[in-house]
Image (tube, rainbow, N blue to C red; front, side, top):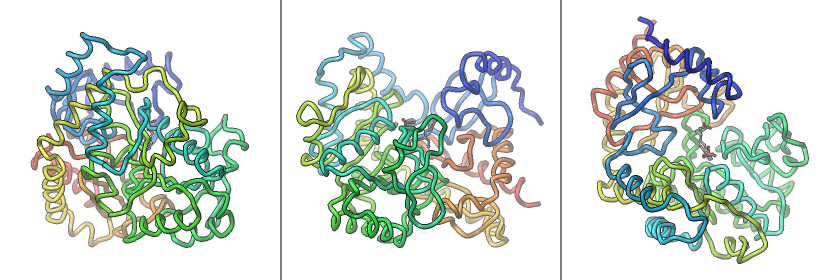
Length: 431
Ligand code: KE4
């Protein structure tokens, strides 16, 4: 059965006349999975509806923000109410203070923070703050971790354990990546090698404490403790990029989950309630270098705008009220059970593997050995993921269109949805 996508195709033709590749963010182009992108018209709770009238159960949550599902009434009414008062001031408002106080109530280790408008701005600014505070230029990222599209992050890892960054994107001059060092996720050796070679030049290590941009890869036991120890020894700032994990995995973030406290945090997605808002923050010794307190400049017309603040505040209040972390852990455990019941034999036959933490989940195909780093992920069968992906779509299930992304459980997902998600995999993989 081929899903009717006539209207999506017609609109995508117009999109190609407006945007590069017909999209406003590359992953949406379906280039990774093939076929025509789905053009959506509206969503409610766990359901997404496209312009052709197809209905999907959503496991993408718009890449994370919609942890409560689509158009949660409390978030919508907070936006409507605020919009009628003022959408943006470009000046202080109490709403930005209220959201910051709520974030600091969740994560009291954060002394100062700054709102920005995207995860990219948050991570870019966090590295700038670390450089200003340490007076050093180099920083370390990990192959396969994604921190947004600022020049300095767009590097490809070279061979060997530790490599100086060469641009992985056109339009990025070598000069802007020459201070970006790339390590191997979960590898202590590559970090030791980098610090042995560049130790006193390194301003920061930025890491996704749970990697969710190369499929889902958990840090090895004590790996984050190791990063904390090495950065402390060398006077480098440890930055947890929690744009994806923040306010999804635990109230106190990955610091609570893994018992490791970074110096700076970055957040996005959930804290804007679905509107553009993100933040970076942490120790005042570092954040006090940010203008106008310090000399590291960072600014933004719509930073802290009351509309996004109202949406973010409504969302954080709701996730606190319903204790979403326990609720999503229960749903996650149910998914584990369903996977074990229905996919156990396929896992034994080395056809796939599954991993989950909180409300993030991921299937890798062509192996039953969980990848530990990007190189491992690159060896999995993305062609099988793509086949499963299209079968999910045909069966009314929507995930982000790439095998390098993760699945999200929202508060609205039910047992029947998880069972269907898994049954589709059996149909494709059992042969
Ligand atoms: P944005 O600039 O897209 O708001 O955030 C960048 C970013 C930073 N850090 C992490 C850990 C992230 O995952 C992201 C962005 N996430 C991707 C999805 N994995 C955004 C999807 C897209 O690029 O369209």
